Length: 374
Ligand code: ZN
Ligand code: ZN
Image 1 (cartoon, rainbow, N blue to C red):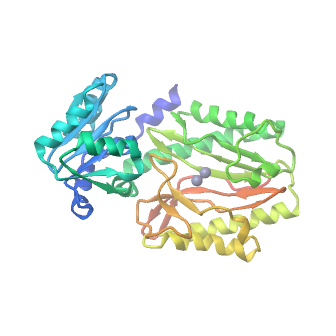
Image 2 (image 1 turned 45 degrees about the vertical axis):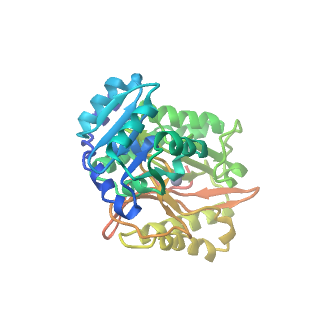
Image 3 (image 1 turned 30 degrees about the vertical axis):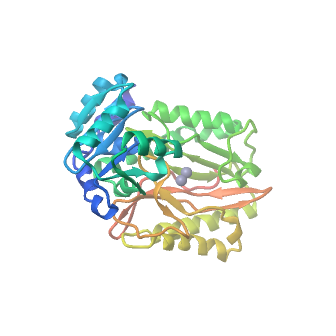
């Protein structure tokens, strides 16, 4: 369809080739000679490979990529296009032997595993059969740490996904007057994002009206969206692997004074959070900026989740923007700011933008208007 073709054509190339060297620079501190990358999203980040099965062994000087016959041509094409100089091995049944022999030949003493992406049984197999001569080391978030800072090509994809979500919302918002069910409206949003060129949804859209909105992650139901009800809409789509994420809360007609007050407080909180985002600021300070406004209004206990999260190849990734989130924000991080107030039996308000952290503030990628009453 024309829109997707034009979206893809306008995207700058991703800068993949240097990522493996950035990863290797982390090996000494992690105490490893090689990293066995098994999380597919990390393999995609490091190599440009988008298939559904693959293994990547990154050594100090060499890279081994293993996949099965379904991806023989695709892996060769994608790794070459990304400029990743890996030895590619294709096998459905001999993967263990291939990795084992490569590790033996190069004599890695300490091989890192991605601790949060490996099951207990996998670890046992890796230790006894895949890398019997090596010491396995549990590593945490090495590739995820690199993924926090987005390069211009990545930001362009997230921006494109945000733009599609904005346009889709503008195109279908008028249909709310026809009183669709939550499921029907979620489907409309999804269809419109796909029609505009999204390859998939970042997650199933949240369409939560009236009391359902009091559950931050409500699933759309067959309940009709009534006039004057608070309606929480949280949705996003994927462009070339990269996600968008946005929440708007609206009402078809006047929702009444309490709902309007909830909305004003969350709007002020969200603005305070956005104002706090800047390179060098503690992630927890952004959370506090949002939380203070809501606490001031007497709803401290009704803000049921953290303020935000990183967005990229995954819809929820590092860094976490929460009271317990450690570390500071750096330029190039893409994070959400999404405070909310949830009152059981009444409903919820959440407002969320996806922003890029800059040296002196942030660049807001989600541009839909923030008018409560449609
Ligand atoms: Zn969201
Ligand atoms: Zn979010």
